[in-house]
Length: 495
Image (cartoon, rainbow, N blue to C red):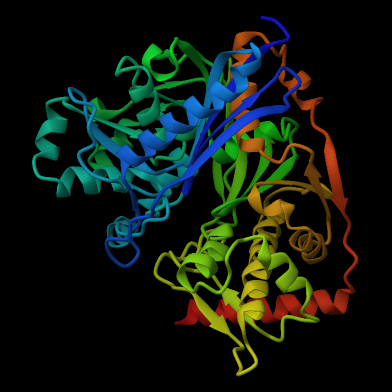
C-alpha cells in the first residue's frame, strides 16, 4: 500500500445509493449519489425495486472510482454499509429477485406479529435476538414473500432461492454470485439470529417458517467477502468490510468504549449505546443488537429506532410540496419566534422505540388559520429532537448515559436543529468534521482488514470535532415544549 491507496465505501441507503472514496487520512476524495423511487403498493407498505438498487449502486461505484483515480491514486479495497432489515429474496440460478425488496419501514406483517405475540412468542424472540416482535425486522418479511409469491415456497424448499438484507444482495451481485454472505450486525437485525450463540437459530427459523437453505453465511464485520467483478470498474477490488448503516455510523464515530453513544439523522433516527461484550436486555423496549464483531468477538449495543426523521422533511418537499429543498427548513424554523403550539407526530409508518406501535399513524396538532409552511417545517424539525429525547430517556433508565452525544447524518448540517437538540436533551452535542460517518465506518472496516489501520484504538483516535452545541434553553421553556410533545404523543397513542 502507498499514500495513494484509497478505500471505497458503498453506502446503500433507503432513499439513495452512494459511493464515497476515502484516502489514508480518511478524507473524502470523491463521491457520487443517486436517489431512487419509493414504492407504496398499499397503506403501510413500502418497497424498493432491487434492480434499481443494483443499478444505482453500480452507477455511483463507477463514478466515484473514476473521479478518485483520475490523479493516479488507486482504490485497493471496498466496504459496504446498507439500509438494515430491508429484505430481498432472489433466484440462485439467475440472480433475479422474485419480488420487490420489502423495506424496513413496511408494516404489512403487523397482524402476523400480533398473532405470534398473542401466542406468547415474544419472550422467546426477545431472549434469543435482543429484538421485539415487529414488522420492522426481516423474518416476517421473508415469510411473507415465500408465502405470497407463486412458487416461492416450493423453490425455497428445493434450495433454489436466497434471502439477504441489502448487503447480501449487493455482495452476491458484485461477486457474480460467488458469495452469499452477511455480517453479524445485519444478521442480528433479522429476528432469526441468536446474538448469544452467534448463529442462525433453528427454533426461530421454525417459528417464522424460514428454511435454512435461503440463509447467507455470517462473517465478521472486517472480513473477506470476495471480490468485485472486473466488469464493474475494470479490475477486481476485494470487499473487506460490511456493517449495517447504524453500526457503521457508530464505528465511523469511534464509539468503541462502553458507554459511548451516537445518534444518526437520516431517513430515520437511530441512537446506539455501546454496552460492551455482554448482551444485556433492555427494560424499556429498546433493542439489544450487535454493534460490531471483530476477530469473532461481538460487541453489543442498546439501540433506539425512530422510523421517521429526515423522511418528514422529504414529505414536506415531495408530498405537500411546501418546500423546494431540505436546506430551506433551517431558515424557515429560525425565523419563527416560537412553534406556535404546532406539533407533528410523524408516525407515517407507525412509531418505533420506545413505543413500538405499528398501528398508529401520523398527526398534526395545534393548527390554526395562521399555520403555514414555516410552522410545518419547524414542527417536522422539532419532532426529530423530541423523539431523540424519548429514546435517550429510555436509554438512561437502562444504562448510564455520558454527558455528550455524537451526531451524524444528513440533518446535522442544520445548526438550528443541532442547537435545539442540545437544548431539548440538556446535553452537549458534538458534530464531527466528517459527517458521512456511515460510509466512513464501512471504509474503516475494509482498511482494518487490509492492514491500513492497526486497531480500533487507532481508528478512534482519528475522530475530530467540527462543532459542539451546548444547552442554553431555560428549563421552564424546555419543560413547556416537552409537555406539548407528550400531549401530542398521548393523543396519537390513544386513537
